Image (cartoon, rainbow, N blue to C red):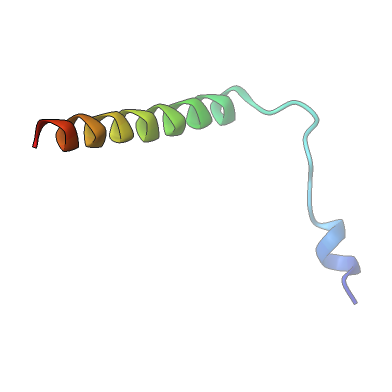
Length: 44
């Protein structure tokens, strides 16, 4: 029943550079947004 779906998934052992770049960029964006919200709350 799930055979074709599971067989179609390719898993790479080492993530590609673009994957790491997007991951780091995403976490940085979340961190900067959180920091801005905290500073705005303290200033208000």
